[in-house]
Length: 451
Image (tube, rainbow, N blue to C red; front, top):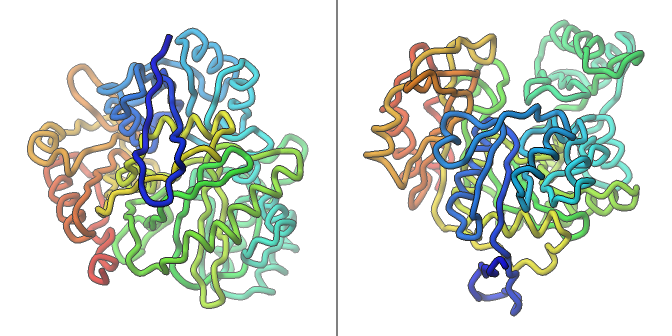
């Protein structure tokens, strides 16, 4: 019999009955820095007795047993989970969620952290998300859903510049164009409407929105479909180059906490965005269980939702989990089994965290891959435990770690404040050598100066 593990010591406001978690075996699905961050946290959780990842990467291989599987094949993922005898499956990326992999795992009787295919439409379709927000009274940008060039042109004319044009479907964080050039906006709209991601026989859709002023914030929440537990907010950097220049990317860095944000931000977002959305999804008969990610704009007119995602964000996960002191497995299991109401309040470090993404040459275009990465051992020897490297696009070629994607590494560091965390992160970055790579030098710089 598994012995129970208790986490979360008593503190002000805590429930008297702590959640008791049996020792668990966990399977994480995915291969990026987000999954490495999840595995990193789970590997330090005393309740986790075995950690598996499919397919993983060169860094994850150091802390978890890797397995090959088609992550879009629900039957294959379920079979692997059953073969390994895991107690919890954690699905990292959005594509398997939208493909219904979580449904297949649940049907196999295995607890899974991740929403159903129907619930994952909050990320899979921006038009669907807008409909849910309207029904739930969630504040968001005014928008039009267009299927023809004429509709798109009329919507662009109605809003004026800056133009915000979004692919309705999944686009790996790069389906949004914000531009003052109306011809560029029309071209992106046309590309979205002709996208191969549209269902067979259907015309693609594009969402055209009003521009939202103000800084953007990412706020994650763990939910079991009823109870919503917000995590700490973070801010990421989407543009490829310093000073927010260059094309959009999947994210070039992030930091947490946000010294400039209102202390009431999390409570307000929980009350006006997260809880109403979860309630509306349950009302529709498609409860959302897993990680609800609200991308927010703090505008002159108040908080507005820019987008929803149905999974942990990358690179924000790296800094949020770096500050989470409550063991992660119990939090994810409580969401997967409907027990979040019994979870003690989460415990957080007062330290700051910064992550800097090291990207391959030509990212976010067609990145060059197969280049050797050196300096990883130096970081481990000289910068740990305050700084460490989370792998994203890497693989092993014999004894050498080589690049295998656009975003190659997330160098993450903690410190007493953002300035110290930045210094530690960039010191670690300076030790890494990858030919042709690039990274931003201004991650968290402005926030650190304001703190």
